[in-house]
Length: 129
Image 1 (cartoon, rainbow, N blue to C red):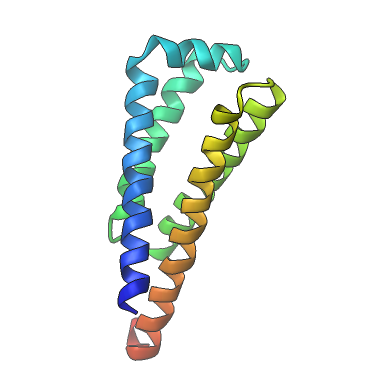
Image 2 (cartoon, rainbow, N blue to C red):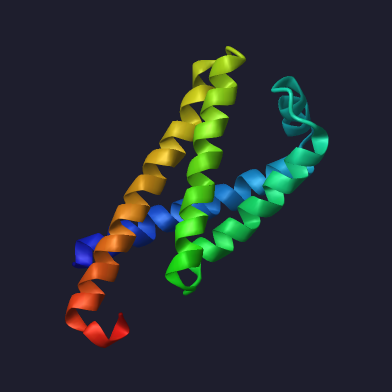
C-alpha cells in the first residue's frame, strides 16, 4: 500500500505542477498564443483552458468528494487526448504530439492508484462508504 500511495502522490503532484506550469505559459507566453492560433483555436479558448487547468490542479490535490475527482480526471483526460489529436492533425513535430500522451499516461496511473487507495480505505473502514 505504501508503494501505491507514493505512486499516487508522485503522479498526481506531477500532473498538478504540469497543469500550473502550462496554465502560466498559456497566460503569459506569446509563443503559446501563437500556438493556439496555429491550431485553429480562438484566443479566448487559451484563457479558458488555463483557468480550467488551475482549477483542475487544485481539485486533483484537494480532499474533495469522489464526484469532483472523477470529473477532474475526465476533464484532464479529454484535454490531453484533444491536445494530442490537435497536434497530430496539424502535423506538428513529434515532441509536441507526444507530450500530451505522456501527461495522459501520468493521469491514468494517478487515476488507477487513486481508486486502489480508495478501495483499500473502504475495505478497512466500511463506514466511510
